[in-house]
Length: 136
View 1: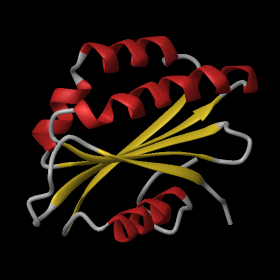
View 2: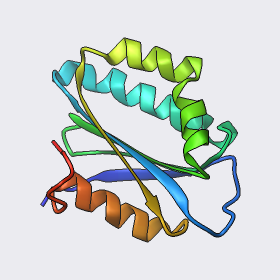
View 3: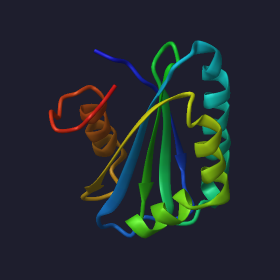
View 4: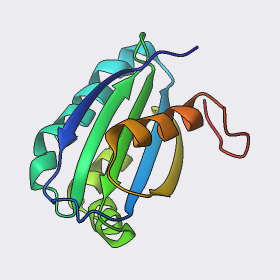
């Protein structure tokens, strides 16, 4: 079984009590020497997360050697995620790390903001328990 070290950070928005939108990035870093800079970029996003409009929360996670870097972000709705993806900071990170690794992105809707349930759903995807979802 793959073990993930993970950290949660609350976002800007308060949950409304209904469905939430979840986006997961599973990034496999090609070279160990790039792991620290990829991890630093993720931590910068994490620090700014409480000011990210529409964000309910964020996990930053990694495998033991750090080569597999994961983010699981929880949003009020897909429009909030789209706004973040089009932000200058996100676009810069995409440019900076385009060739440093391989990215698999997946998204789904969860019934409510239940951190235990959402992480379980993420782990099912990350470990290949859902056969129709790509993973590293």
